[in-house]
Length: 96
Image 1 (cartoon, helix red, strand yellow):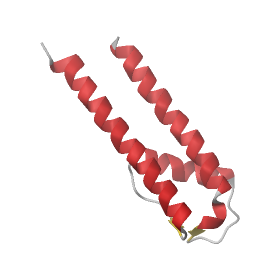
Image 2 (tube, rainbow, N blue to C red):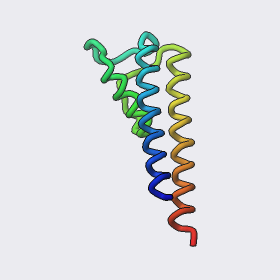
Image 3 (cartoon, rainbow, N blue to C red):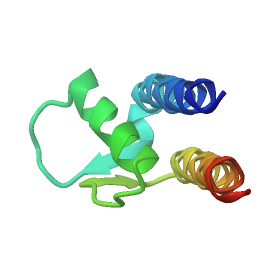
């Protein structure tokens, strides 16, 4: 059962990263970047992965309401998922 939970949480995070990569690519005009090179989909994958990993380091800045809202939604999903995962891990591994 523990392995199923771990697998499901990992798949959920990967799904979120892929989904938000596509959303950031679609909303690419709502972000500015500090470096001036041509942006590619890998740049948006990096942004989505950085947010989902809760690292918080990125050279992307949302410049519109929709860009900011999208980043907030992904951060909120990440926080809720981590709280859920930690709660379940504590119950599974430390509840006797």
